[in-house]
Length: 139
Image (cartoon, rainbow, N blue to C red):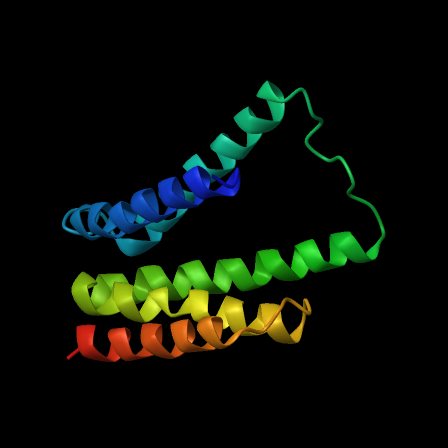
């Protein structure tokens, strides 16, 4: 079994569960509060992970391309999460979450185009099937 597989499966299960928990939180807490509080736990988790691994919290940060990519990723992630939470606060989780899940097909296509990852017929079929599944789930 590839080393990444258990982690990917754990991420899938837990991230899928988060949408329902957030939707429940919206019943009594405003979306902006849910957003900062839930993501404070993400930051806390990152800090604990760094400490447990014995790694400094700013390793590799400097005036370099990697830091620029990280800063851009942070802006894009913030936009993504803000948009996702707002959509969840306004719509049904059973519709919003599948649409959000298409973000993973965007990552696949960008992996082909930007990271020169191998393009295979099965991967293209998977992206098309995922898009088709989302269309069906949101009807």
